[in-house]
Length: 437
Image (cartoon, rainbow, N blue to C red; front, side):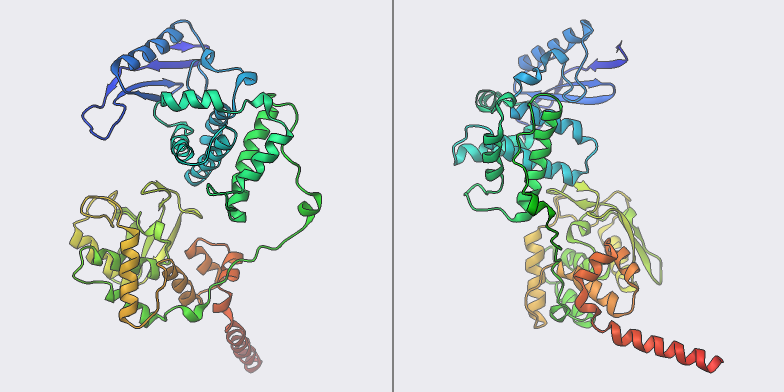
């Protein structure tokens, strides 16, 4: 229906009672300018009433809000909004521009902001509310749950009442865990950045008069502190022959051990993060019959088996013949023929257990006389191997998905022999030039 350059369609109610796992099986779906919206309800009558309200708004020619998808008349005025309502609205405005990792982090931060800005007593109620908010704040969430919505409407702090005193207390509590202990500086800073951006946006929209957030110390703001990245100690990482023996030792009579063996081989020979390993698909592999192959790293597990973009973006990694052969054999044994099919899944189709992967890896390390290492250390071992074999810094950084600066600061220990190697190469070149003349 065309109305003032806006197209709204309301669809038939969807019945999802066939699934036992769905708590609210009646789904009302509609779209605003092609963007799909939906809300779920416990009963058919609730869904019918909501759908009728949508249809009536369309028939009146009412404009729908681009962020929430609801008729504009349903939106409270800025002066009547509480922190929860504003957080949902602001999050919806930013959502399409953010990557999945940023979305998840922002939801966590805003859930904490909303809880602090409400009259919440510590304990079970706070934990339940946090769980609800982590779903309800998302623009793609199912329909609201009445009991929590009523509670939030009654207890959430109104935007119009936010002042310097209240934001000072909010800022303090954003740096604490649920048990009252301090968060790490990095986590607290990330949470404060999102919370402050949300409040400042309310100031810019006119809902709050003046920025109430406590000003940063000018002395502290001017202080330049160089971030020291924790470097990897190559002395504690196995050499290539030992890594090969440890990887082979993962295979056992235990179900899934071969899966963990191949996954660990990918982490080491291709230098992938564990979150990237579990999201490799058949179409990501170039496996020639001989020589080196390629692995296209385009996905990572960003949240409980949810695919998203890798931490530092997509990249293509050359893989050595030993890994090409291992992956080709794995693909053939598992019958993986569809390019979209994930290589590493359990019998039920879920992601392999991280804890079982770690246990398998630790058992294998112990069998070859090595202390426990993280699975992530396979990636460190790969980087160290590449650097010591003479792969240029830029190429090593590209394969890992790092900047050269990050690579050098992280693997400085593996570069300690570079002076002698560099001197030998320069001396050889100078001698060649002298002989030529």
